[in-house]
Length: 396
Image (cartoon, rainbow, N blue to C red; front, side):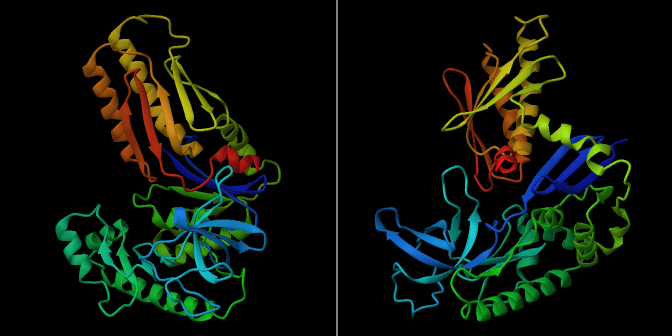
């Protein structure tokens, strides 16, 4: 019997969220306690300078906190200090939203297309397109399109989550959410244009709340926290989104054994920061970061039997592929990832390995692409950069 528990607790300088299945980490996220902003926050920023050859601007979104703003002609910006005349100039005060966190030496990335997300829909102010998730089939899209308010001046994207409303025959919930988000956007823009520079006019929900909200395949049997503030946030969340499941939420109080110690959380986190990862077969992975990419090496390790057998090598590589994609997701590795599997001679086995990697990559919530296998049998994977790696967050 598989037991799924979501644990939320204070850890170092932030809040750690772990999904455990039979006490093994399946998902992990970390939210730092700081005021440097997070994805989804909206600010009144100041344009420092415009760089025409890269069609971008550098901004201060907080005093002394710099960001990168791509300048795309398809979005009309909201300026606070003057009427927009087709140009963005140094000194302009502009409404922007954080799209990507700062990663290594790169500043956080912002957009002029402000958005507010609900469980079933997303409202955007600059991109006024109205559409339905491409992951839904044609007939579902046609039904959901009918629910989108036709007189709305904003863009609306109906999310994949709306599929569950079709199953429940409860499209009123989608309509109500759209109207609520439209009203929220109206208020935000109306008030935002009167705020002073560097003001944060919208603070996105904590990542552990949005992950709960956006989860399509609800797989939590129990949600446990030892923090009163988190407990009350979760209590409000269940009241809004899952009132029938409120009984799975519990507040842990035991002075003799902390929640961290009870579930061995510190050990589990440290394992995700180690270079070497052992596999059940006795083989192991070595995960290292270089200046330009992550490099993962697959080694046959302790298992010395049948090392020359093609079927043995394939089995090790397939086991490694599954664990590699798990480690990439848990550690939040992004950018270019190069994997050195154990060499195989048979082209059919190489193809089987590549197909398995592509299937596993498709399960990742963050866009992940298995690019190709090179002539040297190195596999290249790219993963979209949104947040810093788990290691970088914990060490900052």
